[in-house]
Image 1 (tube, rainbow, N blue to C red):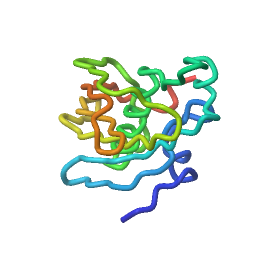
Image 2: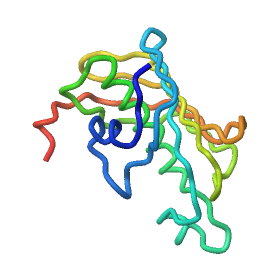
Image 3: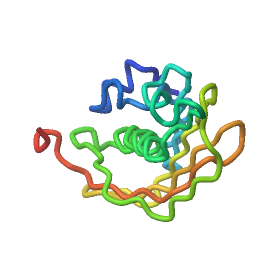
Image 4: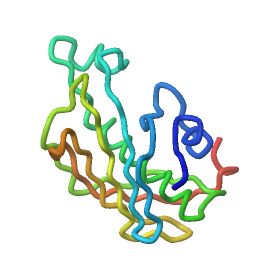
Length: 148
């Protein structure tokens, strides 16, 4: 299996600190269109300083972004290397468990439909085998040279 650490992820995704929210990829199955990424959360994460300082919780929108980024790595590995997956829609999002400092967020994404123009992912974020967030994420594939 191909190794996906921070360096390899940065070669695929356009995101950089503080918005690169995937630390590593631990599972990739192209046949099943499935990927599992990891985000290790420490109290030093910039968003915990303001959301909420007395009771730090990872913002739900950032969990959704982390899931989308894991899906972006999957799309790249499915062969769409000259394009970037841009989030279009979040549907059926449910937040089941707060994500706090010290948690290890497991980012599961499965391609429901992927084509040259975009697609849809079924995504879920797990903490200690408990469901934290689930959602359907739709995306468009945009040529890299069209951005910026």
